[in-house]
Image (cartoon, rainbow, N blue to C red):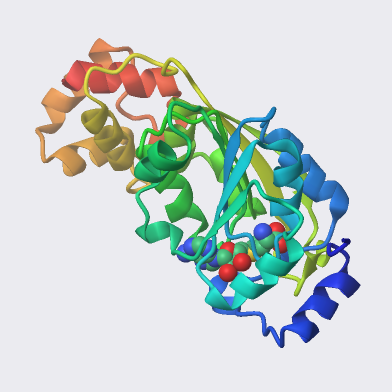
Length: 281
Ligand code: SAM
């Protein structure tokens, strides 16, 4: 059954008297080409995949063709009868009517995919894009990759390099745990209803070995957070206020790893952040 085109989406919405809820980020994708690109980017190869927010099931359909098993988490109970209809031909799809932010994803993986290194794929609801991504990354799940469609601005922050305006704590977090890359841009008019901004599909491939060696990860991320806390201030000022330390002492530590205290946080590479945190350890 075809259910991807704007006409299909509108027909299904009419059949179920479904009203799109802006507050739940319900912008449904209507491009078969983009759906295939997301599913291919997830590198499923017959393994398992979790989808966040299946909506009418357009991406779930592409994932189910490629996966051994798909578990999809959908908050909106009005979508349960729709998904039972649109995905009726598959016996490898399990829909769970839950809020992803209230779920223990590690426990879900252990239960549904024991011993497997799965992928996570989603056309994410805009209102919780960054919390979902950071929660998944910080949970240190043993997953292969996370492929998500997000607002272009968030994608630019995820993939940003040092010294650029988009480089920030999210870029460092993603670079530390993953190799992040842009898969493709997706214009707003390919969604029903169209959102206000364009989107980008990003793939984060989880590293088997961390990108840099860090003595204390908690301290490392505290340094990163402090470094980006006040963008107009020098790294020295940011660190001294973030850690409530003596400036001369902090400057000495920075110089010991070859970092000029007058630099700004956004110019530091991942390995410079690691060297700095290790020197403060
Ligand atoms: N996958 C569909 C597509 O590509 O057309 C729908 C994507 S739509 C951008 C986001 C979906 O996430 C909606 O179906 C929405 O109801 C669901 N959603 C929103 N918040 C959620 C949450 N906290 N947990 C699980 N699903 C959520």
